[in-house]
Image (tube, rainbow, N blue to C red):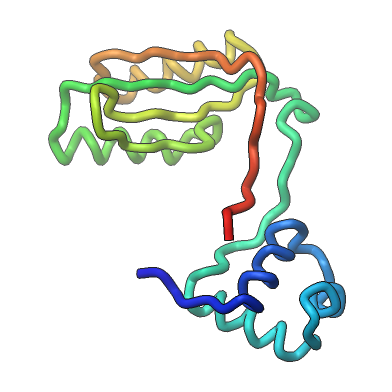
Length: 153
């Protein structure tokens, strides 16, 4: 269920999305408020689940993770036991940045970040050793055109 946010909440969220390491004083100044009301609103939005965990964004290429693959998975297995094994396997793999269950011809799509094609093949071999998969198609991203964590407010 969506939480009701007013314009001030949205301004605060925009500042936090841009740089969550800003001080409360800086955020308050930028949104036209004072520190205590901003802190109270942030705390309330955390309690409501609007704000989740805070983290830092790393540059994958600077860390040697130069290959980004989108992995399309079709399965003929739809039993609860298979799905549990599959999801457990995905969650345990640090290379899997995102996993989505889809409507349509493809059952799942994964975003996988690895050093190179050999590392992707090692990931793939480990995946199919864990769970039976009918068909896997891997698409190598040649260029990242847009990537953001900023949600439209």
